[in-house]
Image (cartoon, rainbow, N blue to C red; front, side):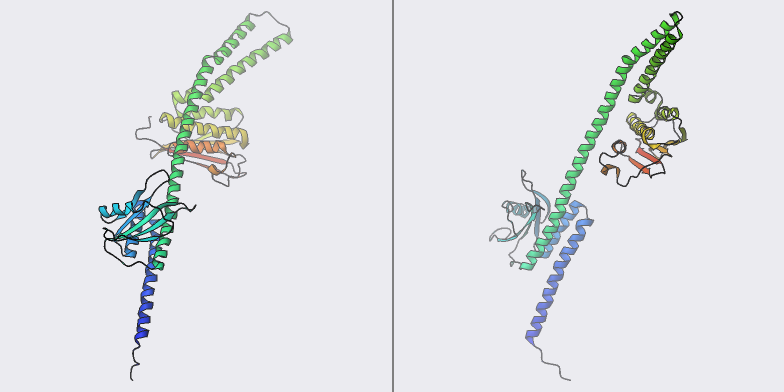
Length: 394
């Protein structure tokens, strides 16, 4: 059977279609590969790979990724090629352009340069992808330019997200530092007020009570009505002395300074026992912890006990304090009415400020805080913080 005659026109068309298919596959590979690397590689490595991919795609041997702020000169994020030609690319990026530009520089070390702008979500240009070649090349077609612009758009979105994330992390660090200073200032102020109350008002109340007792002892027999009133005055003075001591203990418990966290929390739990709740220690440790750790965990326990007294309507409270694997864990659990906590604590606004403060205290120590509660099923608080080496004393 005789073969049909070869049509040169058909062969040329097939070759053209094949080359176009190869070009489209290369463009698709550029975008898919870059999109994958944007999410998988570390930031610095990702930037370098994007520049290398862009150079390989455009068959150019030098590349430079630049970024700048409104009040700062451009700075290089990644580069590919010799340092001298990279400096030349950087000097050619001084004039921003809204669209990709193919520039010829005859007689230069980089005869051809392609400049692709990087724009943020607001349309403002904040960087550029510069590509150059050390030998003269033909101008790329529009599809190649469009593909490179798509790559630049993906890269710009990722870089902008990274900048926003860095700004957010810096803001969170600043906020954490401010909260730490606030808590430290609060503790210092509490200590100062506690000492002032102890040396001033508490001493005066104790002296008043003693003088009233002495007066009552030396006073002649009084009519029953006056004797009853005097007894009421004595009871009131004694109650004021007790409340003053309790207030001082809440501001700066001397038990915490003298005997440690377990004794201080157990002393704080006396407020639960005084109103008829049963308190059980599931586990406890009498080891001394670093001062800032004891203060933070005590305040968490104090806030948890306050919440039980105010809101829980509980009958039984279970406490725990354990030290294991270089961490200290504090637990406060009640069998009260509980509540619905559908969102993370930090997104609840002013609804759970006490819980947010407890979480922040744990976070400042590098630990974590968890609150579990369901309506009718009680509430369980757990704070776990790391301990420094040799930070526990028996």
